[in-house]
Amino acid sequence: MEIKNKKKKTLAGIFAGYVLSFVMLTIVWAFFCFILMFAVILTSGLGLLPANYGELVLEKNNEAIKESEKVGEELIPSGSQFGIFDQDGTFLYGSFDKKDQETAWQNYQKDNQYARGKGYYHFFQRKNGEICIVKYYIEVRYANEKLNDILPPAEKLTSWLMTGLFTILTVLSGLILSRHFAKRMKKELAGLAQVTEKIACNDLDFEVQSSNIREMEDSMRSLEKMKDALKISLQQQWEAEQSRNRQLSALAHDIKTPLTVIRGNAELLTEGELCSEDLFCVQEILKNARDIEQYLDSMRQVLKGQKNRTEQERVSCPDLAWEFKEAACRLGEVQGIPVFLETEEGEHEGEILCSRMELLRAWKNIVSNGLEHTSPEKGIRIEICEKVLEAPYLVVSVRDYGQGFSKEALIHGTEAFFSGDESRHDRKHQGLGLSIAENFMKNQGGFLEYKNVEKECGALVSLWIKKYTKQSF
Image (cartoon, rainbow, N blue to C red; front, top):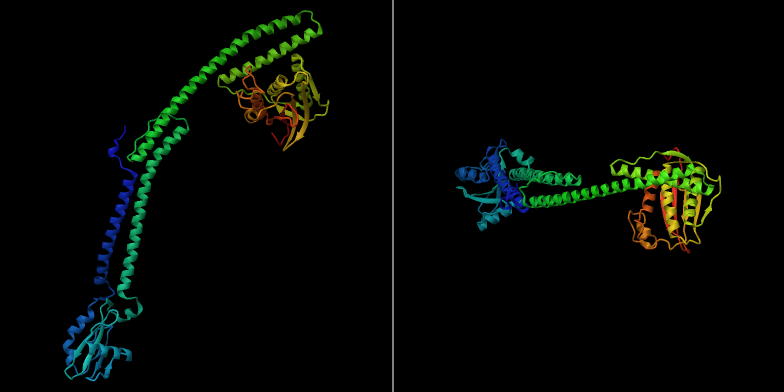
């Protein structure tokens, strides 16, 4: 059941939600680190002193500094410097160096309490007329003075720790949110992937699930429409295939009946007294009738969904070459077209592993094509030779003296039912000759080659039949 679009979220909305969550978490982590920094300052075991510690100590020791006979360092805040001057500005004693003495007295004369950086001056008028100048700092310090020399300033150290913690928490938040977003997208995309995979496998009997994301839902609906259209198309294709198979099966059955009559009459003729020429013709009729029966049996097996597995046998090259020549000569004799042979007896060696019936059928196809398109006066030329590419081949060729192949036929000539080439096809043919021959050659391990004869009219079609070797099979 589909979910209404108004209840669905968009990818932009989901992404914006994750961005907003990330921003809110960042703010929370910043506030948390700020509070934690103050908690560390107040509760740290390092003994941190407050930033205004110098002011507090000076306020506490105000009277003691004014009335004591001599100002000692115990009255001065840790980390501070001081100096005792007379009324003329002469430095009497203290912790100021020479440069600080001059600067401190100048600030006293100007009544300027601000030193450079975080420093401040505090001026005391002692009862004995002396002037005490203390330079202190507004900053967090360690109670243990040795730590101030060893460790970075307390404020910097705390800031560094809080910044590091904030960065870690922010990155961790980003990773968690991105992982959650990726997991959600992966779950949605898995549905799309499942639908496309089933469609690719032609598994079309399933219901497309809905998605909570609008864009994903739109994609799901598009895939559902494609699935339904493909299902209808495959159903129509299957029905057309079944109809064609039924028609071909009926045709094969119809051909069987007159073929049986022809064969029976030919067998009756052989029982009578015939001259040698008539007897040869009758035997040819019987032989070709048997070939047609084999072709029909093969076609019926294919229509029933069974693979047409022909038996492979080892045939000697001389025997196969002789059969090729005999078949070509008989076809030429029937049509009254001369056939010229370019081969010598006994020159072929080796064996061929093949289906003899398929090879002869392929050969008869290309010979018949040659006879149909050649000049009746010039006939066709048959060449049988041996050539070596990556393996040894027995090459049988038919050369005709017709118009040759057109440019389109040179590209699509072996496609089934191709009949766009007026020079090599007519309305009596369905463009199956070269296609059938090529399929037979691929089954054997060889290949079909066809081309126009250069500088002359006509075409050359060759069967490259791979020879039998232990390495090649």
